[in-house]
Image 1 (tube, helix red, strand yellow):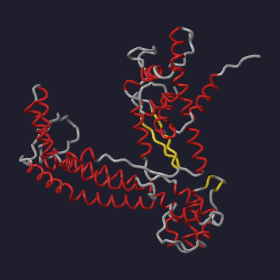
Image 2: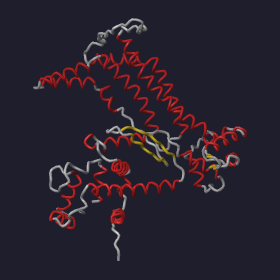
Image 3: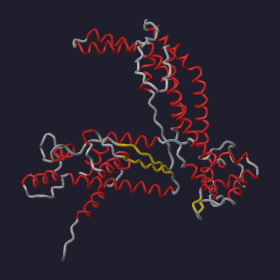
Image 4: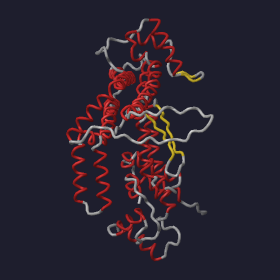
Amino acid sequence: MVMNQVETAERNLALRGSTNTLHQQHNGNFLKEVELLTKFDPVMKKHIDRVESGLFSHSSYLGNGIQNELIASISGKILDTVVAEIKRSKYYSVILDCTPDLSHQEQMSVIIRISETRWESRINSIEAVRYQAPNIREALLEVRDKATDALNKVEAQALAEEVGSYRFHICTVVWYDILHQVNHISKLLQSATMQLDVSVDLLMKAKTSLTRYRDTGFSAAQASAKDICDEMNVEAVLKEKRLRGTRKHFACEAPDEPIRDAMKRLEIAFFNVVVDTTFESLKERFESLGEMRSRFGVLLNFKELDGEALSNQCDELCSTLSTEDEKDIDGKELPLEISNLPSLPSSDMTTLQLPSYIHKKQLKELYPSLWIALRIACTLPVTVASAERSFSKLKLIKTYLRSSMGQNRLSGLAIISINHEIGKQLSYDDVINDFAFKKARRQKF
């Protein structure tokens, strides 16, 4: 049953059904797998025979409470493994993020980062529409001609008209151009060896590129959309939409004059809004990473600093890594250690390569403050993709049909699903022993 719990939780499948009775149609995945095991496992078959014969009035170990206890035991073992790994790493960073779930309860994701970073992008969903619009339109027209149902015919015709419109292709080209730039940065940031200073430079280049795109992107999008319309033999003209009138009241401020030109209205209401929103998002990310780079800058450019500047930045880093009277590094020893570093094999060695070099040459005891500072710098999070992926798991686990799931059960299933690779390496004997210890009753002798 432990393996049953791990496999169903890993695949985000619902364990419970609408009934808790064996050999019923809607008794859930857990009991269905128990019924399947009964056909091949004699021990399980003997247990189920006793349950069905009425020998076990209460403790059949197949109910919802037992499921929750097994989930708690498995997730607890996984957390123990994760905590042990964190303790071995010693230095780590914490990422916190919150989102409401399907039942409008606030859920918080806690991410502990010790050596890797990831980022996922979603450009593939729009790439096909950007470059295969004529084929999509032909397929819709074919569906319209062959459809026998009147509703399907009307929907196919409406979609074909939309895909063939000039407005649709301008919007598609703009979205693709923006997402393409963001995706390029994302692919670079998802490298496990990505450094803080490199990520800041990449975001700066993305901001510069978006600034240029805001000036020339809309006219370029019009030209690209016109080429697509010419390929489909449709007219590249924006259809004017009737502006909705509003009732004017006395002593109110005069409303803004509506924009009559459809192309200008599309540029202001769509293009400028999308580009500005993307720019502000990059700006926010750049400011937070830029602040971290300024604090850890001495580890990135110490080769270019003179004695006074090196000492000042080391003091700033020391204060950053200090809480009250406790300090992780010695601000006076750090500039001396950096100044006395031996000749490095490469002049552009990164903050990931430098600690590897110190470890390989067994120089940790000679440069203790530098060694600690580099290990902390290597754990700084560059992205929040891990939290975003955990929220994706939340949506798969707590669905509309499982909206009444308890918090403890949800947390346990999320831990098993997110850390499924660790779950596969667990010793089922340890989980069973832990479960048996909790269920053991005290007896008087």
